[in-house]
Image 1 (tube, one colour):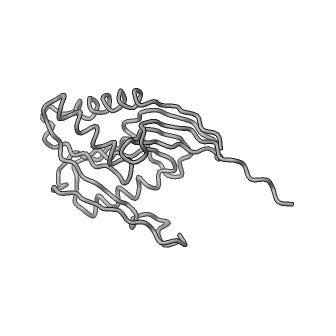
Image 2 (tube, one colour):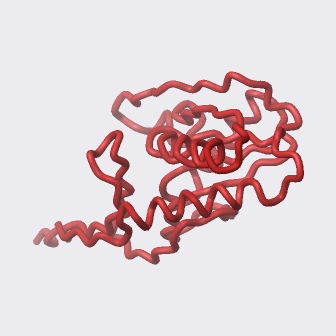
Image 3 (cartoon, one colour):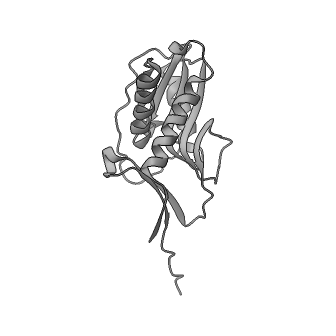
Amino acid sequence: MKQTKIMTAEDLNRTYMRFAHQFLEPYDDPSTLAIIGMQTRGVHMGRRIMEIIRDQFSTEPDFGVLDVTFYRDDFRSKLKMPQVKVTEIPFDLYNRDVVLVDDVLYTGRTVRSALDALMAYGRPHSIKFCCMIDRGHRELPVAADYVGNTVPTFANEEVMVKVNELDGEDAVYLVEKDREEPTK
């Protein structure tokens, strides 16, 4: 397995700062803004962006955590027991401008699941999507509103976003999986 670092901690911090600015740009009054981090790494990314907004702009958007496990279209077709994580949205979504935050945009299925989950919690005014990496290979018509980096990938590659809170470092890696030998 070959790993190539494509974003450093400094690159990530600069991107979080850019996201903070972009999230606030459309609003004269940012009080309707809410940030929701998608389990798992999107939660940590969203918190960092929210902290920058609080520290740099003296406003604190509401923050929530979303797990989409039960909303996935492949939930029942997986053989193993899914690992369900916490969902915590301690505010009313009605008429809010929500930004969903996740680490990697791939097929679009997780984002579709997140939209279904959010609608079960209320009716936001708008929902935008933010990801650190867009790696292509969409299966659904989903696009990110805010993208840290676009990294075209091959089928045998994976993008790993690492956050210090879980992984002990802040970085993004492109990982080339070993190709399986064809069976004879």
